[in-house]
Image 1 (cartoon, rainbow, N blue to C red):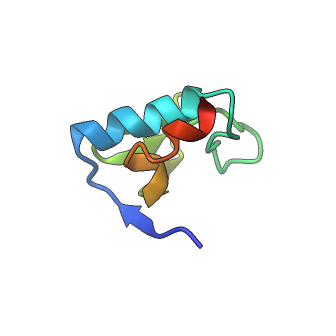
Image 2: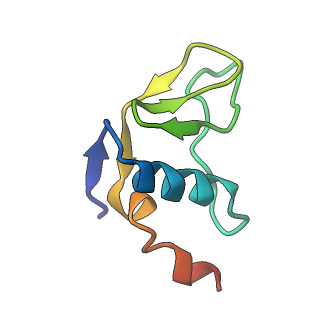
Length: 73
């Protein structure tokens, strides 16, 4: 099982999280609102939805440390 990390996220973690979200190899985190379901964007304060006020303050550690990247090659 993956460990969870909590915001605030560092700049490098934000870069890894958003690259993970943009990868075609994995299902991205999506908005928790049933009406919305947009792909979330990471920033130092956590995840946010661009269309509504949904926020999430955690991620799986492997998503934030680039260890997922070799799985896409």
